[in-house]
Length: 126
Image (cartoon, rainbow, N blue to C red; front, side, top):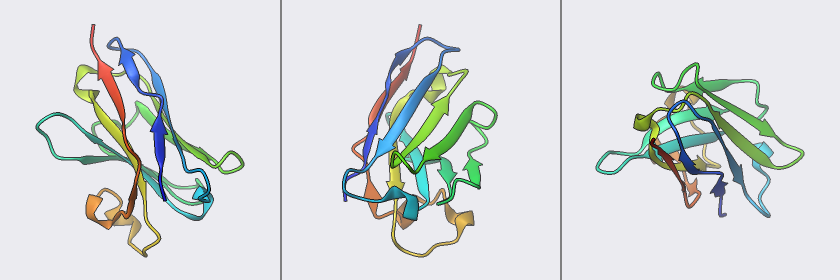
C-alpha cells in the first residue's frame, strides 16, 4: 500500500495550503488517517487525525484552530487544510494509516502506523 501526499509548497507566513492524501488501489474510507510532520533535526510528530467516517478529528495543540482535517470518501482522499501558516510549520508532511487495531487516544504515536506516504515539503518563509 502506497499513500501519496501532495499539495506542499512555499508559502508566506499567514498563508494557506491544502494537502491531499490519496491511495490508488487502496480504499481509504475503511481506515482512520493521520498526518505527521518532520522538521529538520526534529522527530516526526503527529499533527492531525481523522476517523473512518470523518466524524471525529484530533489535532496537536500547536495547530489547533489553524489546521482542519477532512475526507472525501467518494474521492478516496483525505485533506489537511492549513491556514495562518507560521515558519515553525515548515516540515515534510506525511499521511499514514494502519489496518491494526489501536486506541484513538494513541493517534499521534507514529509507531502504530504501518503505511506511510512519501511526504510533501511545506516551507513557510517570507
